[in-house]
Length: 271
Image (cartoon, rainbow, N blue to C red; front, top):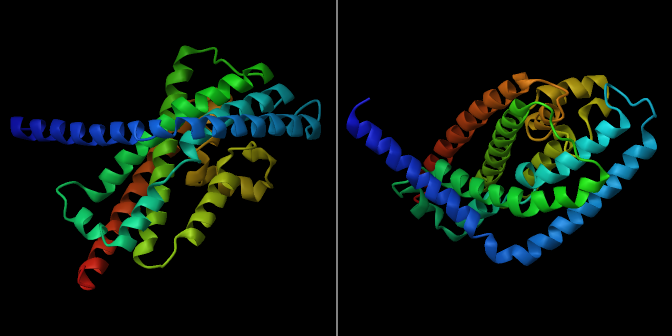
């Protein structure tokens, strides 16, 4: 690679890093509201823990002991603000399409997809730090697993970062549907329901019927919470990172393809 190419790559990386930082910082003004959300999330986690402790048999199921289920729930209540909740990219794109500002955004010398994903990723990191970690501290007394092997932390973090990216890309595509529809609410509820139901945010996927478990396990939604939790709890190895990489590539290609179609639709309509 030439020197000019390396300089351009570094400049591009800095540009999107700045966008991520801005996405992180802009959430600081809502810290009081987010604290209330964290408390509500912790209460929901407590209810979830006691619900599962009352329904699972003493010997556990599918390799999960009652204690492991508690650890699974407390972990996911900590990271769910990074992989499920608080994603707003769909609303930003929808509002931009409604106002007509999207035409200006598309001609900026910044990649439209990368711009929105970088901004959203910074917002998700804020959610993990200022929403998720407080929830984890509040739930720690119920039981919180600490991995025995140092490498587990790195693999679990990588799986989690990929899960957050996939979640942001999914909601980006929901927002992009506003180019063809008047409201993104239906698409949002479909994707959100699939993410929660097949992502394993509130329960291990093994509780699903066998046929549905196989579908969920192979879907991109398992990369959001189920796979990172399995790695963190040392129930599975780093091989569960691979689906995250594969699905990250797939959703990127689909999102970029849809972005191209949306751009052409806007140009054809004289936008």
